[in-house]
Image (cartoon, rainbow, N blue to C red; front, side, top):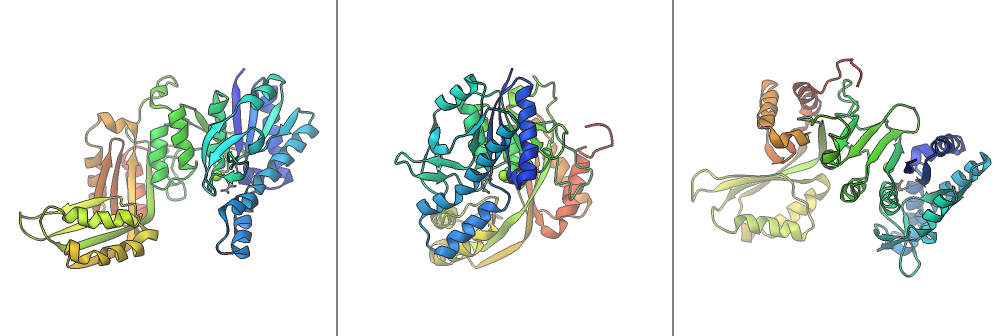
Length: 413
Ligand code: ASP
Ligand code: MG
């Protein structure tokens, strides 16, 4: 017998037909002898609709009341799933965040502080199935909260950790995690297994399947996640700790996936004085303006000569960044600000890189062979990223996918 938290996303809960299908999956899991708790999202589109109502009511809406409104989407689906399960003869009951309770702090993007496992343990003992609305919690004062967009994934992982589940199964509308975006590379492969760290790197560079926060939490709690589709019966992707790979009989891949992120903008400052404090004078005002700087390249020719500095910021922060830099122009002493939003960050990710030199060199060569110019580079232990002109996105992703041997060759996988 295993203890499993099953989580169903918005598309899986969009309408009674789909909820009935979800109930069938829950029933199957329970009848195979497992203890099951279920976490649900609101119906697809519902949270957007509720947020829109808040905006229409007042552009300066109170976050406490926003939470009251948007938490309702999950309340509806958890009640409907419990009704449906009961109709199938199962002992199911819904429990709102405040009934467990899931204690959180803050509003609109609340953080989970503690979860009391007592109620759920009792339900497990009685052979029941608890259905819990994702996304919602309660403050010490008893106010309803929500965890921020996509927060149901985090609810599910946190609940799984609280009841010491064997696994957290996240059912979504894709059937797993792929080596890259299948819309760009039709020969992308579904990964049977991936590590938390790889998943975090892939998510942070634009491959969104799970909410990033939920993956970080699963990594800290060592909670294995299985990503699978509620729409077909194929095996999904396991997301596990690095040390677990061997237990699952998997080899460490050199490169696990290729991700791309078009949400980057380049800023270049020209004619910078070569003296201590220049770089600090640039990045302090950006930090104060809450801008997340990503890639940084500085180019010093000879000591004492003026130099250029290039870095990237999220596209949405570009205007803020330029404004902050213009204000600090005296202190920094640059000639010109050049910006470019037609850039993309392409990354190769894999835990096998740790013990293998040459992954970066292979990337640069593969891009050079196609005449793709590299504007900036960053690396971490398990990731190499390059910034290139946006028009080369598809070509670069395809070329790298092939170069690292990730293409599906038609064999089972
Ligand atoms: N319903 C919420 C949202 O759309 C939470 C979730 O589904 O994860 O963001
Ligand atoms: Mg989601």
